Amino acid sequence: MKKNISSFIFLVSALIFIFNGFLAQAQPPSGYYSNAEGLYEDALRQSLHNIIDNHTSRSYNQLWSDFAQTDKKSNGKVWDMYSDQPGGNPAYEYTFFSDQCGNYSGEGSCYNREHSFPKSWFGSGSPMYTDLFHLVPTDGYVNGRRSNYPFGEVGSATWTSTNGSKVGSNNTSGYGGTVFEPIDEYKGDLARGILYMTVRYYGEDNGWPGSAMTNGADLLPWALNVMLQWHAQDPVSQKEIDRNNAIYQIQHNRNPFIDNPEFAQRIYDPTASLTEAQLHSQLHVYPNPASVSGQINLQWQSSATVDEFVVTDVRGRVVLKKSVSAAQQEYKLDLNTLERGFYLIQLYNNQRPIAVSKLLLN
Image 1: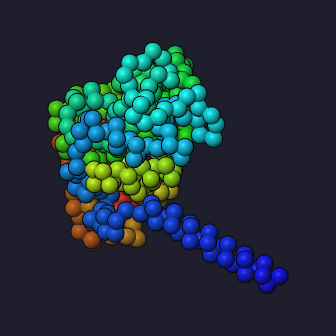
Image 2: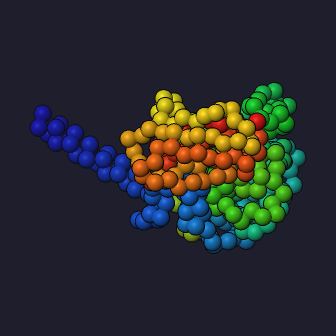
Image 3: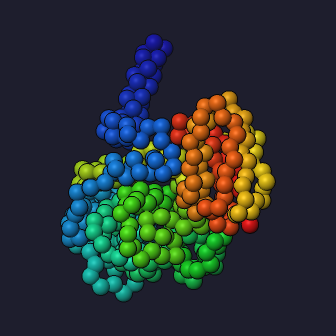
């Protein structure tokens, strides 16, 4: 019995060591995100941009050898998210270098370099063109069928790949055009690549043509909702952790949404963790609806000190920001600088949102 207990303790200790080693792989270098601590919304987005900016840019030809470091399956084959079937047998697999495209006649011909954030959206400029966090190896034919369509949830498919990726009409509100939908197992991977682009090129997107999914480096509201949903539903995998670490060795920056998945909520949905009662009972806005030529009164009650309030439009852009003193619990706001539409008014304490209310201007 003692021998069995000792063996059990040894096994548990070994498993803990392995588990701790696994966790260590997920960690960025010490202090990498220290400047982002305690920040939310645009302040966090700007801080993360500064942290991952000015990465080492690769040539387009170097990506072939880079993929052999970033996207290798356990069997040594190319990890193609457009054809892979996790836990199953894909219809085809590719060998690095020898199966590079080239021409293709259908699925299984060759693999190429997929801009998951299509190059037409940023005008094929640099360093976006070779940024590995949104470039992945994929079957050339499926890549061609994806074209430069947005990612989305397909309602009625017009084409389906061998692993179940689909092209068809979008099935979520806000956009009715054609979209490309990968399989569920890789939706989070691709969403975090897209979210990376919104931070890495924040403020550097002047002149980008945009798309049905984007305005510069910003995601349109419908697309942001889909990417946040995919990010939540398909959590970070060991594959992504390993890829993040490999890219860090190549281009010397990281994907913050792999290292710290909560950054997505803190930037784009910072009040998500608050209950509906918390959000609305502490902040009262009247009259509401209000006139753009008029004035509204803000009154709040909070156990935490309020130091500012922020007004954002339906696209999440800050249109007004006011500092208030610790003793204040009321503010009269002139509306003559705002246009008709819906807005959110959020109270902040030390850059953390603590209450929110909706406002309609007519």
